[in-house]
Structure formats: C-alpha cells, structure tokens
Image (cartoon, one colour):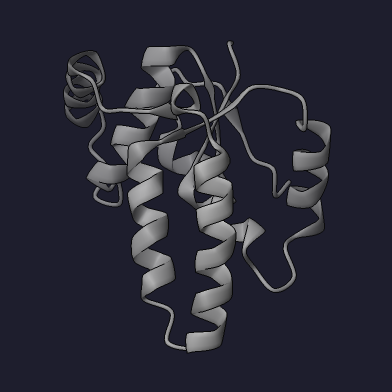
Length: 138
C-alpha cells in the first residue's frame, strides 16, 4: 500500500458541523501519511457544496473546499486514466450490486490501480474487490 485514497463520504464528514470523533482521530493519526483524492471525489464535493441551500453555510463550505482543494498538489489529485477506466470496467462486471454507483466504482478502481487503501465509511459497498478498506468511522 502506497497511501490512502479518501472517498467522498469521508471528505464530506470533515465538513460536518460536528464531525465524527473517530474520523477526526483517523485524520490526526494519518496527518503525515500520503493521502490522495480522485477527480471523481472532487467533482462530487463541488456538486454537494454548491447544492447546500443555506447561503451562509454554502459560502463557508466553499471557502474551506477552495482552500483544501487548492492546497492539494496535482500529484495528490488522481485522474481517471485509461488504466483506471479498464479496471473500472472489470470491477463493474465483477460486482452485481444494484447499489454500486458508477462513480463509487471509479473511485475504487483508482485506489486499486494506484495500490492505495480506500478510506470510506461504506466498506460493504467495496467488499470483494480486493481492496484494502479502512473505515474511519469505526
């Protein structure tokens, strides 16, 4: 394992008014360890934040996200490459789960292709894919 790929639900939790203490503890533990984001997660976060109805809260969240997102070096933001796309196709065929969203499987394929553990609060969604899964909520 070369580091951690943070799933959207884990990033979203850091924006909660009161983040789960176990998630905060995991981030404190992983502070100096390599952490990555998929471009899929970046897009999902943009969509979620811009959809917040309360203008003040949306503005606060956008400010945090802009700061955090810009602070990521381009080497920490992982794209969907041809290899990731091929891995995604294989994963989609191998899982027959009606709840497996395509975007979630793209994130999983990114983790697999880069040898990263997937940090998610929904490990059951990714069970059986051969990934190292970490649930920071537990």
